[in-house]
Image 1 (cartoon, rainbow, N blue to C red):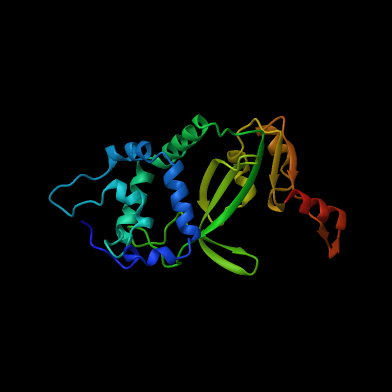
Image 2 (cartoon, rainbow, N blue to C red):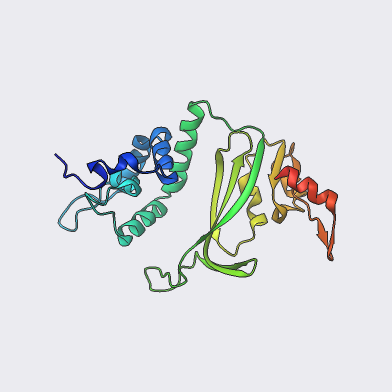
Length: 236
């Protein structure tokens, strides 16, 4: 019998359901965890004479661990897990497996794609195994603030909101340069904010039937084009 914690002693009945709890519950319901763990298992460390490895099942759901019962994997363990995925190019295989699973459930990519990017910040002191700054991370300026880390570029189906393409780059890589990798080629419309403007030829090359619905610049030399700004709001 498991030892009772404060959470399991009845207090959870009065606790508010958090967005984190809702997300974890939904992921547990829709993600094909057995198939994903099966892809990782052949490359995962096996128990031997050294430090016992944290099970691959525990690595996939550590964010849901009850801290009253057991500790979460430490930073070193999480970093090693990340590097294992990178070394064996498992990230792409896991992404493709999830896509196949969702397609089998009837969630299909349609003909509209939304392109976007987000900065994934990291401490500027982040070092790699050679005690040097990670070459995959760079600093970039957004607005009046500087960030250090990486950037996630994604292509999203405009109807189902499924992510069908994902690319990671250093944070200083311009969003527009990754646009070709975010299109599946069968689009009829491509949506995005102003950083993707002026890419009509690129869109046409990689998605011949697609119309460019990215936002246009509405401010020029201090003058605001209210009509163009209204169109951007409608697209957004």
